[in-house]
View 1 (tube, rainbow, N blue to C red):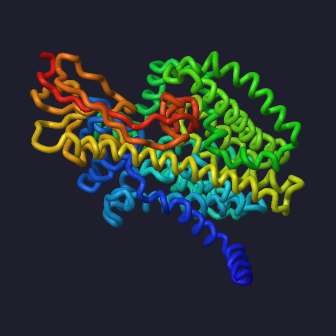
View 2 (spheres, one colour; view 1 turned 90 degrees about the vertical axis):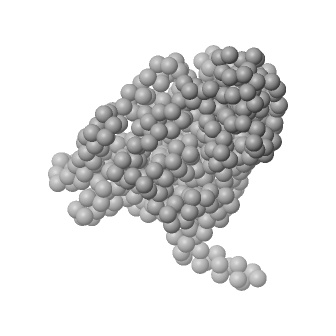
Length: 553
């Protein structure tokens, strides 16, 4: 047995691509059956529409804000992910497992791309790739059917081909990199940030302008074409509209830049927790104690004065619990940023510039450029963080020692716990919809519901109807279902209600990614200042009303 185990380990060490593939399948495979939740339905509906009208991806209506609206006014992402999942749906089917299989392929492309890039930039590419895989933000994002991991797949391979093309003077790879940038930009608008990032890296690498810049004309042409096409189809240039949406959201939410920056630090530390758990082997004790001490004093004070007032749902003991977690993860976020900055300080070559601008640019967008801080906005920095982490490890006294495995193991277990909590949350949301429909039965009038996200997807699967506030005219005997932990919900006036029942379904225990009562807001910091939170997580609950009069009567 010992001999066989040794041979397996030797084979895995000699075949890193298979090792990473098997690891990715092992950790993401159990998540393939995760119910759709949060923004997943938007991408599913887009994919289903694209199969019918591929030339007009946003040419349909959805009810996402309590009103039936054109899809192009609702989504803030370009349509390429819709085409990808449309292909997946036709090949694997439209079930949770079928679409998550497509997500697994995109996740695998990220991990293998990180390994290939890291092999050029450091001597520990397997460590860099594992540091990406075993992070909460990657595992949670990879178990959705949204556009974020697909963006990162195009992103990391764009950088791979760009770096290789410049170093080898191969025009074909530079052009391929430009094509990957265009695909990234058409998957998520943040992909446009690759254009200045690669231009700056190329400038430091080549020291002068040249034909290599032609590769960046491809995404620029794609951006112009996208603006023109969406203007022609919908009367609005959607890339420009997305920028306007962000500005309007900032004004409406009224969150200060300081609070947003602090929240982004906590999301960075929590999302990239592998770097935090490896910190004892990467930094001197004095550095760690200094960062923790300064963050505890400054971050703690600012949390109570600048951050906490935006979250009235945090009450009593939950405030102190959230404060402690916030300070810890904000300190971790500071270490992640310093990791990239210190790598640049040590080297100051084109590679260091690429990595530090990659990390800093992503952080700046997540903190100040997006309409809200969320885990998915932190996601694009992962490959760069993994690489600078590996480069830092190569300079540490622990190089070649087994102690690092302790930090990696702790980080991996923690990331899996967060991913499982998010999985359990999605299961609970699905169960509330199904149990609500089972409770109201059939033949008792129309079943209406408010709330959206995954709850809406499963309610509509069961033939319930989303409330359109402009045209809501229920009849006596109709049923109205309101999930309490959701968006765009309002209780009916007492005069409309004949009876109200409460239904609760237990969700994740002790840890969650999405619950205002404990400050968890992985998908949007509007819900909480933490990417995930420990605490007493309330059950997923909803009200079921039997209506006795029509609306407004």
